[in-house]
Image (cartoon, rainbow, N blue to C red; front, side, top):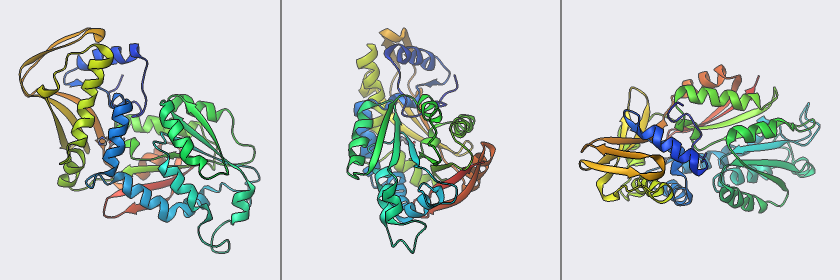
Amino acid sequence: MRPFAASPNASAPAEDFANDVEYYLGLEPRQLPSRYLYDPLGSVLFDAIGELPWYGITRAEVGLLEQYGRDILAHAALFPGFPGVPGPSRIVELGPGNGTKLLTLLKTRHDGSAEAGHYGRREARASRLKVHLIDVSGKALDVAGRALDELGDIEVERHETTYESGLSEVAGKPPAGGRTLVLFLGSNIGNFDRPGAEEFLCTIRAALQPGDTLLLGADLVKPEADLLLAYDDPLGVTAAFNLNLLVRINRELGGDFDLQAFAHQAVWNAAASRVEMHLVSRRRQRVRVASARIDMEMEKGETIWTESSYKYQPEELATLLGHTGFRPIERWVAAEARFALTLARAD
Ligand code: AVI
């Protein structure tokens, strides 16, 4: 299994967790897959990271969705009235988080006048848009689903499963005559290594029909000082998010990690274009994790690599999409935060 190739919001039953911990801690250098950062406390800490002044991804993305949401929906041609779109359409979101991003996008449906835009309030209301939320966390699905209920005219279907099997569920029931827009936001693509990102975009493409669209949110390369502040914030929230993985292993797998004996570290690896999160051993120590059959010695300064967050150049995103069966049709960039939303059509 390739490190960091899996989706960041996936989790696994206890046995898979134990097997992964055994396998990845045994690698050189030691690693843990970033998807395990998202237990209930980790998810709350991640939401808090989104509020930090030094972490711009969430704010930049919501700002772009507010500003360009109507254009995005128009390009995605989700409503009857567009040539070739006679039926109801749908939006599929992979990892909806607390639902804010989709809610922001959908609220722009009624922005501006009917004459100024590509479709009017009447068309938007006439077709009841269906939304599919895919996440392994039932709790996340409930929170996001409740946020969307606020709109009143959206039908929400929850898929409590991995991205891959959720996509195959929705691929099996394409909308009659309508279009599909897939949202893969929050720079979740950045938590895949490059081959993993390509593979996963191919999986998304395989679930779509030609003419359907994908909205991809990705963080861009920016100055190292900004990246290090974003991933090692002065309030220590990201450190808590990282260290919580050891708390989770202690609780769920009978580990004896001493939290005081590990420090959070963020490193910008320019050659690989990624920020790496590590947990650094503060001293020589022995660690046991009963259910994962781990009994290991760690040297002072030795690290456990817990996450990679790849940063892109805008042209690289276009190339990646082009290689995976998509044609980029529009890109919106938050200039200050260096974050891009790219809309691409399935060929
Ligand atoms: C979810 N993912 C895109 C976040 C990121 O930026 O890689 C997770 C994160 N890790 C540290 N801070 C936030």
